[in-house]
Structures are given as structure tokens and as C-alpha cells.
Amino acid sequence: MKYYIGIDGGGTKSTCILVDEQKKQLCECKGGPTNFLHIGAEKAAETIFNLIESCKEKNKVHQNQIESVFIGTTGGGRRVEAQSLEKALRVLAHTKHITYKNMYVESDALVALEGAFNGNPGSILIAGTGSIMYGKDSKDRVYRVGGCGRIIGDEGSAFQLGRKGLISIARHLDGRGESTLMTQFLQRDYKIEFQEDLITEIYSHNFDIANFSRTVVHAAEQGDLSALKIVQDEINELIEHIRTMHRKITVQNLEVCFIGSLITTENFFSNTLNLRITEELPDIRLKKAKSSPAFGAVLLGLKRIYMSQNM
Image 1 (cartoon, rainbow, N blue to C red):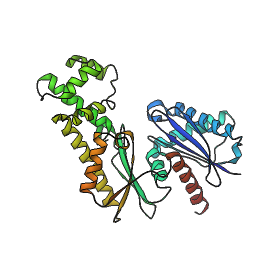
Image 2: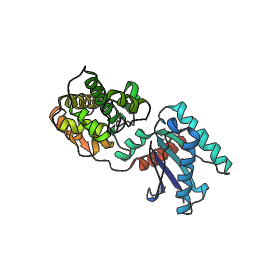
Image 3: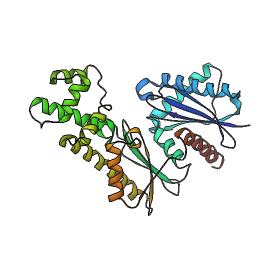
Image 4: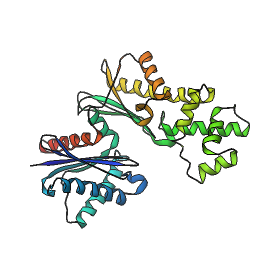
């Protein structure tokens, strides 16, 4: 019997599944973060290795029966960085006298796309802490929109909502900006009353900027003009992501699956985005994901094996 490993690696947690030849999932193991750009390749490799070994032990699978290990994780879409994680994982496995055959590292967004449509054409819009959009056409060509990171991108993300909300508050506290409910909520919920305190929290105490997006969205729902403008501007960015992807994938009706807590949970932001799509983008079809990103990783592993055997 042959088996296949698929891993969906994230910034806070990771999921590993083991699948048999019939694509039946046999087990699922969860572990810590594998964002190697933040925690380092060696630490990420250790988490991945432990996840793989846990799945093998649960099902009494020998290493020689593992046909592929496909890892989707943040930063894996850039080949140079991906190779550093692959190398770290191979080195760690070697110390345990284990060799991985057909082991690949790719973007977490790519495995999410593959899982969402079970390998078929479609597109995903991811909006959580960051944002990016991936799509695939009927010829298996993959397209990307956005995903340039928090400094020059991540439009429509929780981070950008939070960042812009805090900028509005800083301007208000400084006397340069209009009054906003966000200032009141910051004082009430975070006990931050003065501009100096805000600066200290942001630059010295690692204030969770992305999490503050909830406050921004709540203020917008209450009718705060500054928060409403931020929400509308970021929704405009996500609408533009979808329009751009539709221009790249020239189909009559583009299927889009939402991924990420900002747009998959019911809130003022996600409800407004859904309404805007209905009103402005009649050729867009919103779909629910058919399978998990970890299963998408398995499918990509199988695809890579097939391609290597038929080159």
C-alpha cells in the first residue's frame, strides 16, 4: 500500500493528513506554526517532521510506503525560500536515518486553491491577517493577484484595516483628524488613552494590529464615518482583486471561494463584501471549499509524481 502526506502550514498552526491510494484520509495531526520566514527553517522543519511521524505512527505506516510529502506554507511560493525549508527538513530527517522521496514545498495559497476545487479550475480569495488571490484555468495555468505583504500589499486584509484604523486614531489624538468611535473603543477595550501610550504599544509592546481590525469593523457597523471609509476602501481593493483575476481567467462565470477569517465569518465587513459582489459582479459565483488545503497538498503531490513519470 502506498500513502501520501499533505501539510497545510500556517503562522499559528499546521495540519498534516495521511491519505491512501484511494485518496481516503486515514488520519489528521495538528501542530504549531511552520511559517519559516518568521520562526526559521530549522524550527519549521522540526514541526513538520513531528507531524509526519505522528501520522505514520498512528497508522503504523513505514517510511518506504510514503510516496510523497507535499507541504504548503507561508513563503513557500518563492522558490529560493522554499528550498531552504526543503533542505532543513532533509537534513533533520537524515539525522533520524529517514529519507523523503518526492518532497515538495509550495505556497499555502496554492494548496488551498487545489483543495477548494479538488484540483479543478477556480479561484480563491484569501483575506485574513494578509490577503492574496489565486486562480487556475482549464489548462492548469495558475494566476496570482496581490499578496505582496503588509508593507507594499495585503490590501483588504485584517492587518490593513487595523493599521488604517490606528492611523485615524493617531490623527484624532494629535488634533489633525476627525473624531472617531475607534478612539473611544481603543480607550475602553485596550486602556490606551493618550498618543504616547499608543506609540509605546505599537512600537515596544508588539500591539496586535490585525486583531484591531475587529474594532474598526465594529465602529463602521455603528456608523462611524472614518471607520466606514476604511472598510469601503479595503472592500474596493478586494473587488479589484476579483476583477483582475477575472480578466486573467477569461471564463463567463468565475467561481470564487473565500478563505480567511475576515471574509468567511459573518460580520459587517464580509456581509458588505458579499452584497457588493452581488450588485457589481454578476459573473462571479461564490462557492464553498470542497476539500481542505491539506487535501489540496496531497493532490498536488500526486500531480507532481505523475508529471515526473511522464516527462
